[in-house]
Image 1 (cartoon, rainbow, N blue to C red):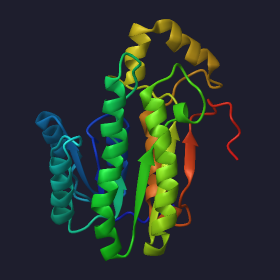
Image 2: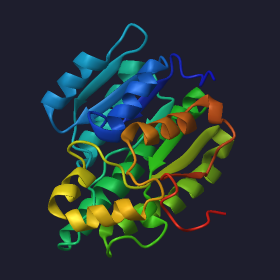
Image 3: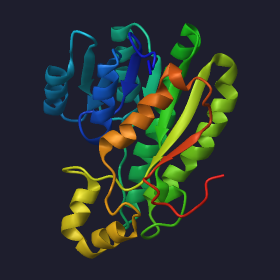
Image 4: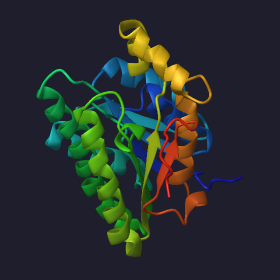
Length: 253
């Protein structure tokens, strides 16, 4: 299937590792130019050096998405550099944690405001160019109770309403807004890699509870995100795509 991504321009926050990096590499393979960021200049430089190809280009810069002015300036720079934006994927997350009130602020700033501010910055450019696609990242931990009460689960839950409303409101502008909900995903340096070492009983219990007996891989989520972000998914708007290998127990009507 041709996803129709050749010569498109995508902006992804935090695509130097994990799921974001897999999304970036898949987009590049499809001929899509990508702009990304990280708080680490070393990560940005390594990504630019390794991922740019003859087929597509990767652009990037240092940016802390929690800094509103810096974040908006970075987006404008990526739009100008690539001469437009067709796809926006707010990928940065503060992750989980139950230790204190600071988790609520971190998840609100990164997961919620990082998504909202990014959308507000790219939508005018998408409207001007005739449309685009925004794909947010949720989590199955927002769809049903999982682990314990966490800011991550609750803050991510707010994005489902936001994505649906945004897709309804901007459908007339040919801007599609969808959300992907991954289950537990494991990769070196990721949260489940840490849980395996620090809370081994919880990790093993999660494995036993999964119908496949394993956790997901970043590329399995990235493929779904790239599809929803592509013209091949032109009739998907306001959708929530669960990518969890059957881990959740709820029936998603």
